[in-house]
Length: 180
Image 1 (tube, rainbow, N blue to C red):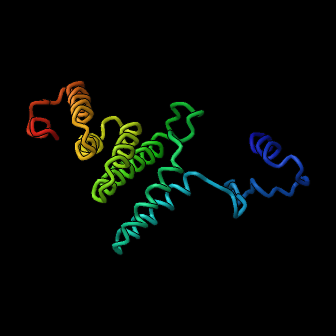
Image 2: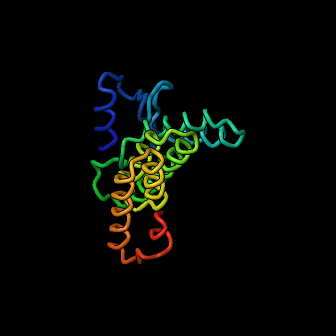
Image 3: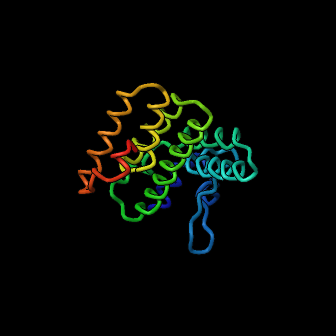
């Protein structure tokens, strides 16, 4: 009954017994999307793969452009309308972690290229995705310093220290004492 309802929703004009989008293969059902269909998760993964390949051959410009593409296609939590569905948790966490890492990687690349303003934006995006991303915090502090914004760097360092303290982590350690 659910498959019939889904077919009715996705293919209201189809001929009876001739589905095109929701097809059965043995005991399984598949979503047979058109070749030109856009899937944000596929676009995200494809851009990450392109970035890794470009980085492997030393093409930094393409790697950075592909990281930007990946982050542009990342629209946040996977299927948020499904709430705390247990079957989604692994994939949600995987995409979130990949997106945060991509943003941190982009921030590091922007910093290395001498673009501290873009590095700040990428590090902030990293922290929006994952507020506990240590590298994101450290890059944010360094990017603000390179930008010539010592007050913003100190404010970011203090936010990082507060986050660590909220987790019960000693903030007097060498990392924060030396300014990240």
